[in-house]
Amino acid sequence: MKEKTVLLPEQRELIALAQRLELDGVVDELYEQFGSPEMYTDMTFEDKLKRCLESHEEHVAHKRFNKLFRNSRVRKRIYLKQFAPDPSRGFESTMLLKLKDCDYINKGINIVISGASGTGKTALACAAAVEAMSKGYSVMFYRFNDFMTMVNSKDGPSFIRFRDRVKNINLIVFDDWGLSKIPDNIVCALNEIAECRYGIGSTIITSQLGKNSLKKVIDPSPIRDALADRLMRDSDMEITLKGASWRGTSEEIKGEQNDY
Image 1 (cartoon, one colour):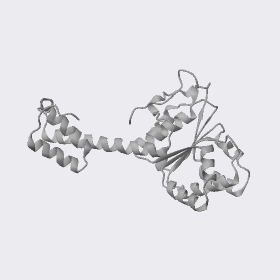
Image 2 (tube, one colour; image 1 turned 90 degrees about the vertical axis):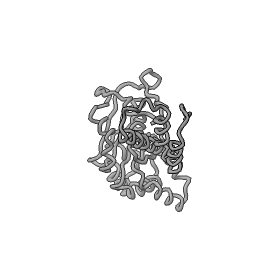
Image 3 (cartoon, helix red, strand yellow; image 1 turned 180 degrees about the horizontal axis):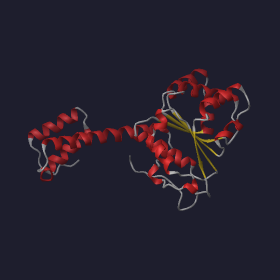
């Protein structure tokens, strides 16, 4: 940041100390206060200090969000504020508030977002993921067919490393579940991941199938039933989106590129 005035030696020393301590938000605020002192003449010392601490808190949250977003594989930076409540399309205000509060993650509740193609399933899942990251939760996002390809490419030891890496992820999103039949090895892998994450975090699944039909793309087996018991429970939420496709229309939610 460019200095607006010549700083006093003690001001430079204070800024240098904040820089050594990597208090970047405090540094920015000190430059503001020292560079435009006339704006802060009526403030008490306590108020000035509070602004420094709040600036650093905001900086830390911003940095944390950007790191989480880079690691998440989320396809678009979409925000829940872009969704207006519209019961005719399935966007209930109570549902949007639940996604915003993120309490479902703390409680380990899974969510199935179902609906026809183009009704906003992926957009809503991305928005829920972005909201979770803004509150400090870790997220991993996979198109389900890409996830199957990735699992197929791993041998036993590399899959175990992957499983151990994702078991503490707060929220995993599987997008477009059910576009093709799910083979046994993928079901086994999913069951291992779901088992080690049980009670730790949540999973969001988007699909053209309803929650009660998600098992239809898996051949009957004990493993299928075990997986369903962890990912598709009666206590889990289902959000059903309705209406005509948004794709190619002016209403389509394309996502914002603003930083958090």
